[in-house]
Image (cartoon, rainbow, N blue to C red; front, top):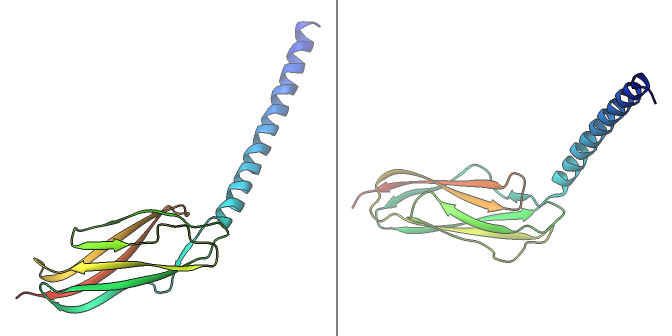
Length: 143
């Protein structure tokens, strides 16, 4: 094989490989979109910011945020963090099956707090996106 023929074969192989790579990328993107649609999805019964209303400083209140796994695979909550040590979350430690309902209980202790309080609870799970925020507020009157 002379150099000219070798260059021609190499050029054709490079072009073919480039098309193959593009096809793989498109197939990968399509697979990713399909998998994402089937991933566990945490869907809460209520949207927006939960309002505890007006509290007296030192009151402890709780709210249950109910949710359903609307995805096609079991939902696993890995961790939940709160924006303040005054807030304690409780969540299911076992997987939540597709279509199953469960809840996150949030307890807020207003001791040492006064005025408008806005708190965030972040859920880390095997969902897309991996983080989901819950919000609540309260107006705390000082003692």
